[in-house]
Amino acid sequence: MSADELPGTAAGGGAPSPPPGLVVVGHFDQAPGYAVDRPRGSDSWLFTWTTGGHGRLRQGRAETRAGAGDLVVLAPGVRQKYAVAPDAPHWRFWWAHCPPRPTWQSWLRPYDAGDGMYVVGPVPAGLHGRIESAFRRMRADARWTGAGPPPDTVPADDRVAVAHGTAARELALCALAEVVLLTASAAREPAPAPGVDERVRRAQALIDADPGAPHTVRSLAEAVALSPSRLAHLFAQQLGRSPMRALREARLRHAAQLLEATDLSVERVAAASGFASPFHFNRVFRARYGTPPGAHRAAHR
Image 1 (tube, helix red, strand yellow):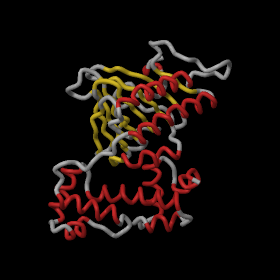
Image 2 (spheres, rainbow, N blue to C red):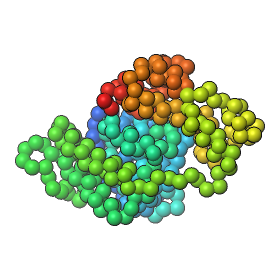
Image 3 (cartoon, rainbow, N blue to C red):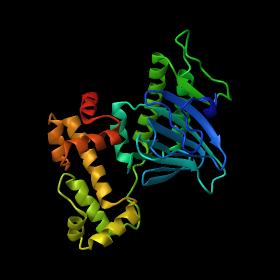
Image 4 (cartoon, rainbow, N blue to C red):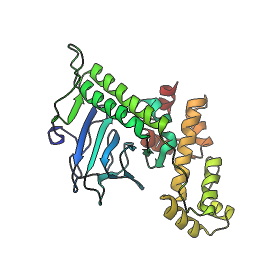
């Protein structure tokens, strides 16, 4: 099966992603010119594991270049574009569309690049073979019909598999869970970008220390002795996002931690995380994590 034969799968610009509940896995080796653009984002989570060449991925304002040993995860609901990197001869990668398991988000959280993008890597070379084996097993398990043992292999030209049965779906997700756990546990967490202005670092530290505080660009700028316009310019230029976008991401992470670790009501979690409107909080939390706050708490309990 090819991507062109899979209903609802993006094989080019503007095409939709698979439906939210479907588990789909595939392996591509694409030449320059391959690109996907989803203006409304994906309907499901997208995992990519690069094994050769380079890809360029964008999610909202977040962007990364993926090489061998990089896992990049894109959450649903945010505009995404990915393609063979402009200077790369090709991009060879495994990919999977699926609903995430709740624990995966806590594993991925240290690698949050903003706007629903998680960049996990580089993963030590000694694990690359096992991770690729897990993707191969995922593709084979997705084809299991329930009769006899799951297949050990699939034809070399059969690049895409869709898990239709419940058993095949769960087996495939177990293989992907191994990928997420191995990469998130073994990868080196990204160090602060070199050359970032110390005042920008301090502003980010203020946000991280108390995301629920009533921060504004002006209050952050005053705290680091910059004008609001200068801070906004430096912050976006050096960290790739505005101060207010960084604040929203920090507040959402804080809210997720409160939901997982406390019995505070959703309304109190929203207020403690700096969201004045519970309705707005519910909307942005669902867009960020794929489930509403109450369901997120239930899944983590």
